[in-house]
Image (cartoon, rainbow, N blue to C red; front, top):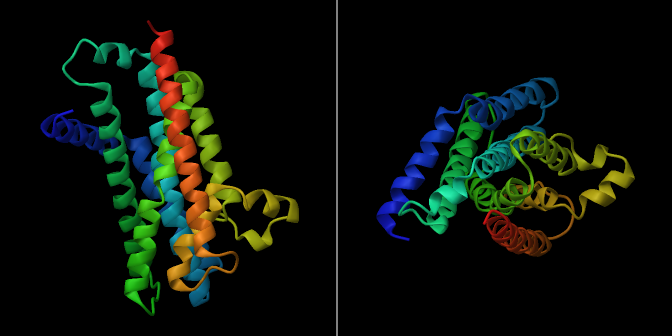
Length: 247
């Protein structure tokens, strides 16, 4: 894997994201729209506005990974991209790393976009460094969901990949407290949410703003790390399995 090839492929993947109307809809317009609805309808306090701002920025990063990348990977795998790579100088490793870089970059742009709109619409922040820290946590914490998108892409085809990706995206968004505060959910769903990566992703991002109300930062980090390692290992195994099956 050469740096020149990786740079060119990463740029290409990012441009594909930006030219995809559906991707931009899920990653920017949906979370921004939800923020405006929530903030005008319910966010009449400082704490709620912060909650909705971080929640929608996090929801946007889930959209980048699960709403877009997962279905695209399933489509490309079914079209035979992995087999095609064997006839080109581009290695599978460069191909996959470029997708991670492009998705990670798009997640960062989404976080900036959502929080910028929130600030322009009147979001008040007592400590802007804390907001920057929360944004960086949202950015770095998107890695397990990128890995999960690779798992979905390796196990689904072009027809079901989009449905599965959107389904997982919405379930993790809702149960993770991004679309509805955890304390308003039934106790059964709260118990389930405690073990989901999206819950700890959101709670960890809230902590610099002193808005998280349960658990500890160490618990959040450890659970996200475990999910990242688990999804990464499963993605590597799945694609090796798919590559063997295609031969």
